[in-house]
Amino acid sequence: MLTGMKHLHSTLAIVLLLALVVAIVITLANYSGKKPYNRKIALLGLIATHLQFLVGLIIYFVSPLGIQSFSGENMGNSLSRLYFLEHPLMMLLGVVLITIGYSKAKRQTDSQKANKLVLTFYIIGLIFILSRIPWSTWSLFA
Ligand code: HEM
Ligand code: HEM
Image (cartoon, rainbow, N blue to C red; front, side):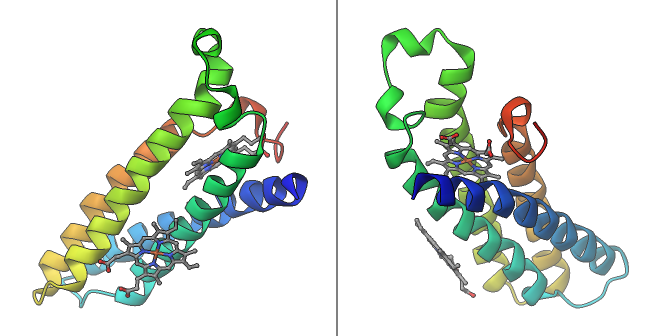
């Protein structure tokens, strides 16, 4: 089960990064062209993010690199610390930011304000996510 989940998490990471970039680019085009807010495209980014978060959460409790390796000794190992602490924490913050952006934009009646909200929250969320991806060990590239 862990192997399957890890493959899913690894592949979904690509889907998620693409979905966020597409959502940001289209929203930016709508914002600069003063066009209506496209909720569907923002929703695509939100769903990909939530799905990946759920898969990550499951892996966290199953993988030996997740919560099981939470210890003072592993704190001193930067790769261990990335897996059991930094990666989950920064991803959580990124997901929360993206969810807040989507949610605030949904309740916004002014299109330009909705576009700006999604742009701001999605870009910061994406930066958080990019900052703590385990690039050096990502099985898709390694
Ligand atoms: C640990 C798991 C998850 C948590 C804690 C979570 C949390 C949330 C929260 C707080 C919202 C509210 C956003 C708002 O105010 O509109 C939300 C919306 C949403 N979530 Fe998740 N979610 C999770 C998993 C998933 C999964 C697995 C999917 C689907 C694949 C999903 C799809 C959605 C969709 C479609 C919406 C927004 C619908 C809309 O308002 O238009 N979520 N989620
Ligand atoms: C939402 C955005 C997330 C992205 C883009 C992401 C991306 C990735 C990537 C690319 C890997 C490397 C996979 C590989 O080596 O094949 C990975 C591993 C991992 N992720 Fe995530 N992740 C996310 C969220 C989470 C969350 C929320 C958790 C835990 C709560 C989590 C826990 C883990 C763990 C424990 C590993 C190591 C798995 C192992 O090799 O045993 N991830 N993640």
